[in-house]
Length: 551
Image (tube, rainbow, N blue to C red; front, side, top):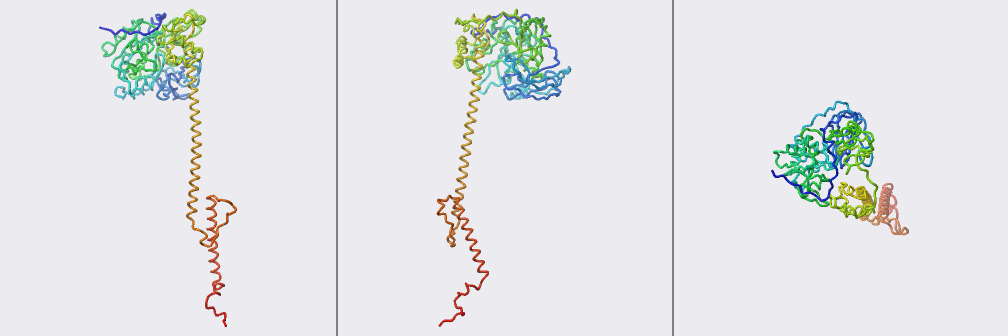
């Protein structure tokens, strides 16, 4: 049988893998902690809204945080028990800052909530994606991007190739390796669901050649499945990067600013495929994940851990030794030191390394750059790390952006080979954070300017509307005056305004009304006089009066 050969990619390094110790034992289910701390924000999108209150009883798998919009994913109770707190606590992040969490006191029953039937085979694709969003499924390769969004490639994108990332190239991490060895069939069932949702015609599983047991298990599980192929790749870091894996498997090079879906390719981690199958076939949301525990522990191995389990309890179960100075989350190339041992395991936790001074070589003191160009030779993103370093160090962030700082995947290859021991990735992260901060400030300033302009426009509009109302009222008054009969025709003189100067339209109308009222009063008075004295002076002057003689 002819097997597909990889294409390779530019750059990369071959560090010591440190993987053998954690692959000797099968996956162990970690004990349930008495208290589980579940952060609400466990994806790169919006923070889910809490759905529970303090004192409320929750079942295992119950949704305790609703997705905040489409770019988000729900969170669930990892076991049954009572909610004891909704508060801010320290979470696994390099900043050490606190985030909102739901604290659950386990009751020991581990009782699942009643399953809600969902026939994903009969449901339309959008309903399946919404279900996965509410099941909390995110990318388990480290990015924790909401997976349901990657199943919606876009109106103009047609997916031909689905890629499952089983490369797992970073040292120490073996969670995907053990998952493929023990649960290959579930992974490929999830892959078939993903292929159906994306419309992919073929599925490629990329695995590095230092995982022979995982390769054999995946090939055996995929035997007879149409369109599924396991491709063995040379062991080279960072083969697990999305663009690097696409290049190695298909030969397609995704350029700057473009998405892989524009070239008919979509990538998912093998752990994500497993979570999709668990959610749709078993109705189980993402409440646990496989975590590698390595370094200075007596029993290095992989655990299936409930989300929210305190790191210290997992390390204690593995037998953490004395002398541990810090714990890294992730691998030594891209991981970071945890701010404390009380932080919980989250969906992004793929590895915990108990670090001691003798475990890895210490980083020597940084020296001036000698412009050797070694960093450019190993950069898998085809960047110029030397130029990016100088621009970032000189706060020339515009130039750093021109040279593609956001194409940097922060793999650490450049810093690994730097003879001057410069922490290059730290400079790139600094430049990115400053650019993001500047963009946020600009967005806030633009929003403030828009509000100011809108306020001025509203004031001008209200002024114009008031002027229009006054003009309309004046016109109506003038029309009313012109319709009044001339009072002088009844012998009534209008009040003189000769000394008052020009009268406005409203004053003229007022004078006309007064004159009209005076005319009516005089008319009534004249009528009353006639009624009171019918034979008076008016009768004395009638023709034919005999009261007088003429000569």
